[in-house]
Image (tube, rainbow, N blue to C red; front, side):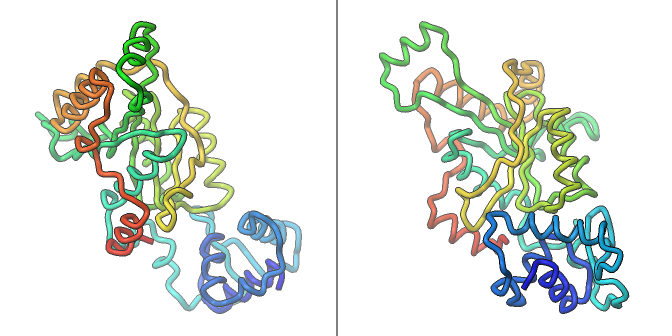
Length: 307
């Protein structure tokens, strides 16, 4: 079976437009993927390229692009019988919420070689506000600290401090369930606003619409504003990806840090904890969000029904 045959059979059986990722997932569900003739390392990208080229260059193509944002595809002259909005809607209901994803991010960034950081969830509803909208987009969902010397002895730490060799790093994470073209800019600029105080800021999502237009826009925003993007992999958290790295800032926004300390008691406690750990040269993990083991993550994902 070729890629285009796989697309055709999948759309024909499903009877409604699908995105590239949905076509790939449904083809496996329907049992077509096992018949696909390919040895490439990125078959989804190959499928996307073949479909776009066929629509663009083949006047007798069996397919057409049903929508652009999000990008979905369907078979020409075939009646749509299923309600496709239930599949592509950004407001589709899930059994979990954004905060249910926090333990996954915490476990990923603690072990990932780029971050190696501890995190703390910040509840925006605990922020003190004098007027409506004052704390909107002020602080992120999760904050983190890279503590480079937690296993060093006190003598080494004294020497490091004597050289003023400070390599601590503060992170800001804005969590979302799904990112697509209709919500990308809102979510991205929310992360931009929430992360001005940190060394690195990231937009994090469990899922995103995997099409070339969306990724091009992600890259453009990343180049312009420096916020990175992380894709979580709940089935194997270590396989989570930094799709676009954040642009690191050497300077912290002390005015915003001070404002956050004054307005949110959890953020203030986070700052107190990291200052204490820096002085004592030891990370007290009990002061931060819990890092789950591999088995604990699997049980948690199953319990929360995270897909």
